[in-house]
Image (cartoon, rainbow, N blue to C red; front, side):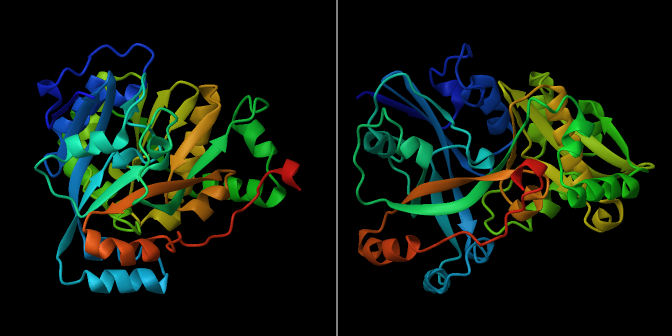
Length: 358
């Protein structure tokens, strides 16, 4: 299989027409990411008419130490403490977790693609999402990889009976309905605006700080996301919106939404946590996003990962997710595979807020 690899999307024959393909692997979408991220290495791979995107990045040990409480994982971290950082090759867009960053029309051999992608490059860990590793067109059998469960993605299925937000609220049990009423009482002084690029660019440092406030709380911290990417997406796509939450002239939070197909994606959020409890900032963001998904007549609202128990209070359900990991050092692989296989995401209690689930 002939394979072409590049670190710059303009240096490879990446078809600029979108057609019916996944927009998240389109030239314009990936170019938005590339233009504002020089803190990691972009990898574009074409083979047998198929297209794949991934990236290489460094992760500090301290940024993954809280991912799992399993004692074997702690042992693993202590083993690597003599290294300041680890090199990961993630064969998809790690900022968008469960969204495929590939377009496949023909069969492919994943092992050959990875060899081509990493030619003359080094990685301590190769990470492949389950939806690529287990793709029916993949003809490779990669026995040295270990399957690892990762934090679930939270998805809210939008009922056809929800003609507006009040209808959604009416479907909730009394306890959860009262909670939403209290959210709106605490946040009634907030002013929610959809902003243009000029305002966002002039306040980009504050917006970046709000986003960093959220990522600092994540149990697994990958490479840093540059919020200037969002400004570029606003210019490229009418279906992408950034909502900002003000108290007077003070920007306290923001949320982003990308509408594509029958889904609304809400991945990037920023919050000033010193105001979060007083004004129910994050809860109000979730309510507004649900309301927008209903107005747009979407079938699903994809909330992404983190704060899973909290999101389940609003009806979101977990979608179990896995990655396949290869430890590239063959001498360590035998031991580490056994440890990695035992890693589980932190446990949490799923809430069931809808009346129909009584």
